[in-house]
Image (cartoon, rainbow, N blue to C red; front, top):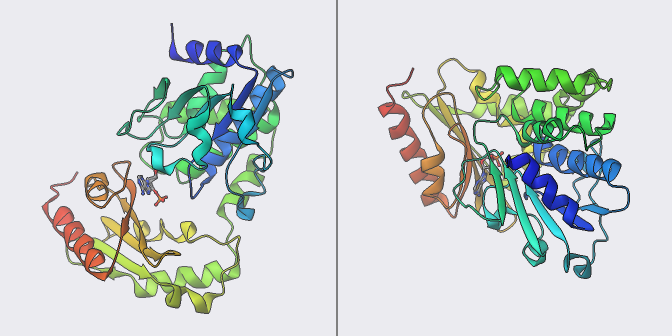
Length: 319
Ligand code: AMP
């Protein structure tokens, strides 16, 4: 049985389905999660279909998760975790308390959890996979225009507006398929691309303060003190500046070190060639070959990551 059929059969067996996403959400995990919720609600009106996760006002244009999901609802529920490679990254620890778990993801399957898994690390996004899930089960599922908008937003987000190498001919076909439902792709593209004046000033700061090493490795630390003068709003996210160094011809791979609440640094690694997920794994993280994340506990670890990145880029024979 094809995995898409097996997943649908499992969904049919449960009255309550709770969909989880990862912490620090992005348009793909939100779009995939809320798009799947929209499809399942439209296709199975008698079932209770829920989505959980911390509220981020910056994603309200995509919709919101359900905020009043009780512990009790997990008792007989099927949990579907989307776009989340590692168990500790799942937003809301209750995902483990459901009756069964399905993992649907496009990251390398480093942490193979769940009773049923559909992991395809060649797919551009989880939203692309879930569009394929719909298509494979078209006879039994309904695709509301809103679900198509959400999946499209996820694909646009994870492909960097169809520019990252994971964008395949199939990705473009799926985006076209979604667009035929008639939502405004232009509104989605604009919502994902626009930045606030504060973020525009931060972008200028990034370009002016980025250190570019002779190897092509680049980095920038953004401490609370660095960010304070920009007066970023709750809806602003440093995510918007993470791709910027990639536009520079001499940059091959780069790292941002962003201070977080407990004064550790969230490492955000990106690359145009050399794989950086091995480096991320060495610092408690992981991710894709060209986009990974990890944690640095202090300045010494930041220095170490910079050195490792420098070596990795210098050794890369590349293209
Ligand atoms: P980010 O820089 O947070 O957008 O992350 C880029 C990619 O790396 C995403 O695909 C994440 O799934 C992955 N990633 C980020 N942080 C971690 C982490 N701490 N552990 C595992 N994977 C991570």
